[in-house]
Length: 360
Image (tube, rainbow, N blue to C red; front, side, top):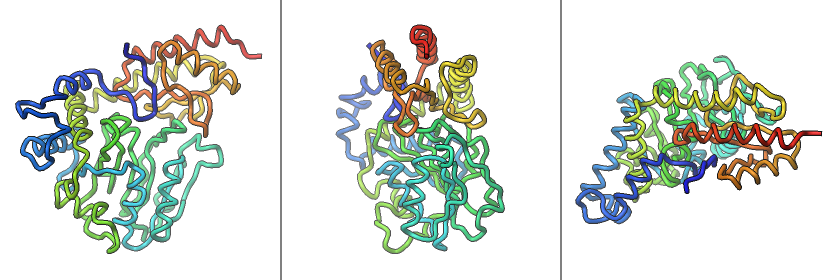
């Protein structure tokens, strides 16, 4: 029986995608073999990775002057790859809005003058810092942000104005959830295991003029120019994850693209947030003006009740609802593939749990 999987990642995948992948598991098309067995140099696989890129460009409306790369190492490797490729003047600015942006900042400090120009650590990252154009150093090589914060349940409700300084965004937990103006960013990267595909592939979308300036001691596999010149196949790519990303992108396209996806996600998020705002048993962890559509964090205020909530939810098929230790409580990750029925089931359980477990 399929459960409602609220995991923050690896996370739920669309059922039609899983069913298609299952049907093609032992033989893709008329190739006589599984995608997992194919040479990445074969015509059949070159068609797969080519279609994945074409679909991503179409669905996200990626401008022609941007490269699309399918890499490995997760977003965590990009924490180092970004400064090693982009930190030409040895200066970079960072906004700290959670654990992952902080990790990226610490990695950037290894390669040059990295400065945290704003942070929301003072309130356990419950909000998104607001900055102005003049806050960004004019000679910075880039400003780095994490667009959606999986652990804390916050998301940028604005795109920072950086002037001529390239904006770099980790979009691991919100990519493909709604339309985004790619041209406002110098580079976007995302680990796929939340909204795109199984763990294994990392998407990098980077403006042409930002590549080709990597530091000389960069490992070749991390050099965007080398990977771009080799069509993301300088080394063997994560073939299966890229194939799954292709299927997910086909699924998104079939539903009407990112405009339709945004509407579905807004409906799910509103259902859960409206309930949270209508009562006083549960407390939403993130400030209202920067709540994430993808990761909804909430607590009862009693750690023992939180623990009981997660256990009882798990027992009825509401899986992976326990919050990250940094926030506690609960976290409902309602990515693209989470059906609205899952959110309805969660809200119904929340109502019953509150009724059956009054707080002292």
